Image (cartoon, rainbow, N blue to C red; front, side, top):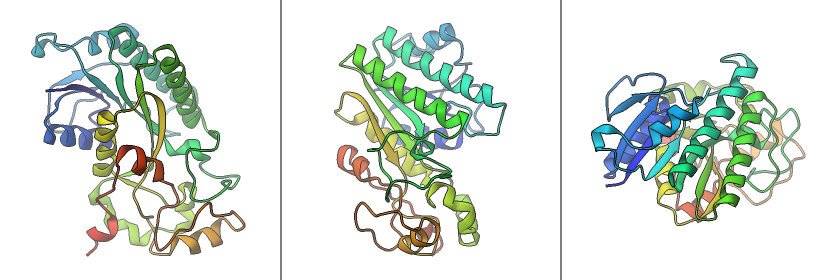
Length: 284
């Protein structure tokens, strides 16, 4: 059975990832600074800004008799701007990402999935996006210390994979992670408050699906994927939203209905990703 370390496994997306991996037959260890609310798997409390501790973590757990770790899912991070001082956001996120990639490289772990961010698409769009739906094809546009830390992480991933052509690092640009319990508030969302990320979201369970598919994908190198749900958070059609809040921005391809403005075409094509959980279904 494949042994996967999930860093940040105590968080919203982390919990969903651990459950999904366990449901699909993986052995999982949760590594986080915060203990989990519910014990789903073995837990290690660790600060990933310490390289020695990170190497120790990825070298194998004692309760598995020091067996090798097969893969790493790195979700641990300061999750958004404004939580702590901006220098800490950048420092913690950048150092922990470097340490996980470096520890994996030293230990010969060549299957890494990492939580990048939709913010690299230009959020919160002080300047409008170049086209819709937005995708991975244009250069990153970090606007905060948080998104800058993610841009640096993607560059670290590219260089590590250049050093080792057999290494795989899937950089998943997750949209705003949501639990089903939060869907009741969706109909009351003010579109003005949600235009910051093109009205996007990702159900934690579909985020977990994307992580597992990335682990299983037969790819090499650093690959970036936008991960969002197939629809928006709004009852208004996507074309109407775009015309009102981003007038003049061209469409790269035709979209219909409530289709996401965060393109998941590459994730569908390369990973076989297919979102299963819409907030609209939960309202019925």
